[in-house]
Length: 342
Image 1 (tube, helix red, strand yellow):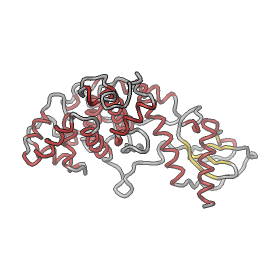
Image 2 (cartoon, one colour):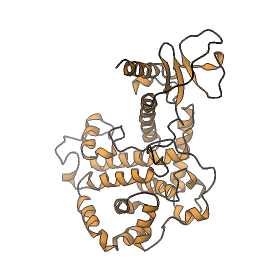
Image 3 (cartoon, helix red, strand yellow):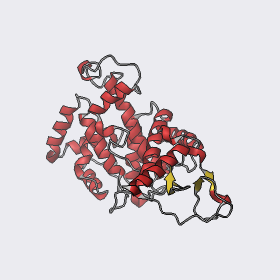
């Protein structure tokens, strides 16, 4: 219990200092950048870094929450189909590493130039607020879920024609739409129907820490994609090759291309008729089909994670901080933000 108290106190201290931790270069040299919280005499020798998994997870949750808010702001109104297809085409070659931005001249990336430009502007804004730049693979993966969430909020609010009037916020008896999809009361009702799409830790996670590509994927890797195929087995085999359940291709099919080829191909598999019937039936009510879509999306976005932990590089965005009287902790790489406010 005492150890847990110390860990939580350390995390609280790091959250409280926000961007106020100081550069450690005045105290001790190290090949690993880190910061300190508290005053120490010159030449003070800090103990070896020992950061708990709890502290790292706490910092990761804060960072994820901050990122979701910022991506939602900077990518507001982005096209859901383009955003999700971008992520699926990127991961579909075997790695979610942002290489898709170098592949826009290839058939499977046709029409994705605009969403890549939007993400580029988003990344510039994010990086200006970060001590460690956000990776492209992580941005595309998390951005896809954020854009799904915000697009589906508009559907639920009745701002689109996706649902009939009886299947929207007002039609389901939740009260008058407050006029803002970020309204807390509206969002609470939204998460009742779209729980897996929640952007908090309660939703289905999209984890961070992927390596980034600095060039297009190989032509051989690109052949893994079933783009343009009319054979349903190509799609299910593709999913299996990424260690994703083959049934995930049903809810995600509409995002695999822009002309409906994938949907037509996968529908032609009689073994999947029952799943399509349920998918079609559930399309009329908010959150049912979308629940399966976000589950499938999250499964695809886990491609490349450690088979043992299910995670990527958990140290990629964490900045070690030595807190006086408490020891080592870690904080997310956000500049000048009171993390306690998150």
